[in-house]
Image (cartoon, rainbow, N blue to C red; front, side, top):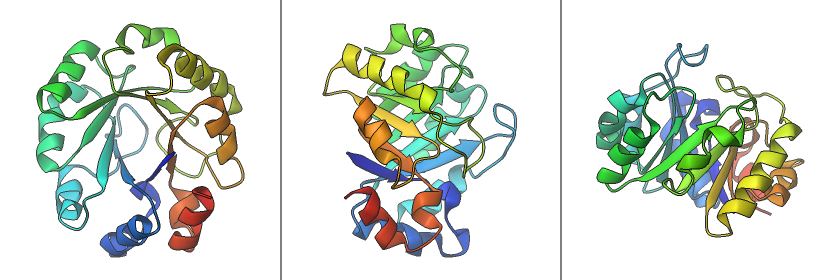
Length: 209
C-alpha cells in the first residue's frame, strides 16, 4: 500500500511543514489536485505551488489534473516538478496523446474515471498507462463520503491487470473504511481530510497500520 496525502486539505500557511510531517510518518507520495473551475466546479492551485514545494521534499508528486484539455499543460506540470500525471478520460479529447506526452518526458502516466464512468471507457488504455485512478466521490471537493459502488470497478481492473499494476482510489477514505478500498484491490490510497484535519503523524500511522 502507498499512501498519498492530498494537500487539498492541508493548511497552506504551513504547507511545507505539514508535508514534512506526513513524509516522516511514512507517506510515500503527495497527491496534488489541480482543478480549473470548468471540468469540476471548484478551483485549486497550479504550477507555482508545485514548484514552490518541490524544493522541500523528495516525495513522489502525484499530480491529478481535473482540468479540460489536459494535454495543453502536461509539459508545464512536469517542468514544475510532477513525477506522475493523471488525467481524466472525461476531459481529454485525445487520451493516447496525453499518455504519449507524459511518457515522452519519462514520467508515470495515469488515467482517471469519475464514479459514474464505466471502466469500458478506459479499457483500451489500460495497457498503456502505469495507473488507474478510480474516483470514489464526485471530483471537485474534499470531505465527501466514499461511494461503495466503485468497488466493483476496482475489482475488475485488478483482476484484468494483475498484481503489479497500480490502482489508486481518491475520495472519502478514512482509517475506518480504508480496508474497503484495499480489499477491493486498490494499492494507492489518497486521503486528504483524514490526514490533515488533525494530528498528521498519528493520522498517517492509523491509515498505514
